Image 1: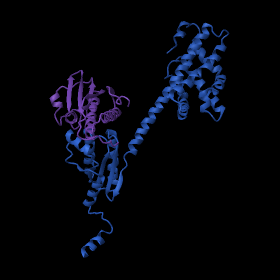
Image 2 (image 1 turned 135 degrees about the vertical axis):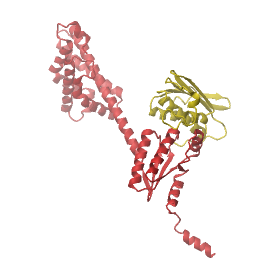
Image 3 (image 1 turned 180 degrees about the vertical axis):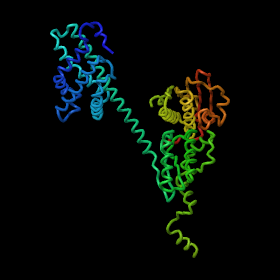
Length: 305
Length: 148
């Protein structure tokens, strides 16, 4: 989109081109001034040359955007060259604990030095054509600010999405309790995405550990509604198809009452109130018994008395 | 968080799975503050989870209003789930155990009704649905700490 001022003096050079030419011409001076601005100074702490280099790149990008006439378009292709760099700078500021408002202010502070240089280009710093150029530059710098904020926000969204993925994996460890017995302690909300991960890792573990008994412990699941119950039943059914018997343990009294009122029929699912009971069941089914080491001796003593 | 701290209605959006978790958390907190026992809390939170999911899946999203009630000797919590979705055409059928239009167990609406003391559905086909439930903190079971 063209800036409106450029339409009025169509016979002259559009003001956006003037700004572009100015940015190209004064790139070095702008970069030098920006190197001392808060944003560049705090991001490039080691070397001033690096800051100047970054400033040159940003100025060149702004010149390209102005040359395309799209000073108010955050999608202007000119920004692509510096989008990554701006993102890294904003992220680096965010790591030091500054909030997005602060970053926005620091980007806004970049405008002043450039405006000064631009006014100096004109014989009369407040002449109408100088004002027009300053307006175009202001719009362009505003767009730069938006680009930085947008980069920050999308970086934040990516981070959240990545952490959500990590949470899925972290929260579903499959533990081998005994030979051919595995357990999954479920913690938190069991939504569709997580229950899918649970099912997959459980079925994998059943194969890897040659498990015949799989315990799903729901002690850490705060709410068992019909969807959670359905996910549990599906997991149990899938485990059964793999030849493993599933035991759902950790059903607290309040959860048990809620399941009954809700009308969910867990009759086909083997359940135990605690993980301990579930393990004891799995062991006894395999003919394993855990007894104190001295039990045999003590029994013999008792017999002789 | 502040919304449920003081007696007064609060409204929570329902637009995603993450919102469902938030609704559950807020209802649990509000119920605990009103002196609901652990069983009542669990029941109400489960009902809220079912109804909020209905709002999301069938109503295409909406919001829930939490209103603490004070009837002298007993404290209550009213939840109104509001959506502007397609509405429920046959309410009797929707309240039948095992009937589902969404591939679930078909226990959401009917199950939620059994988990609360008062239950009301107001639905106009094409305009939306409002499900209002109320639960009271009965005095019998003493309030215990909520395991997180």
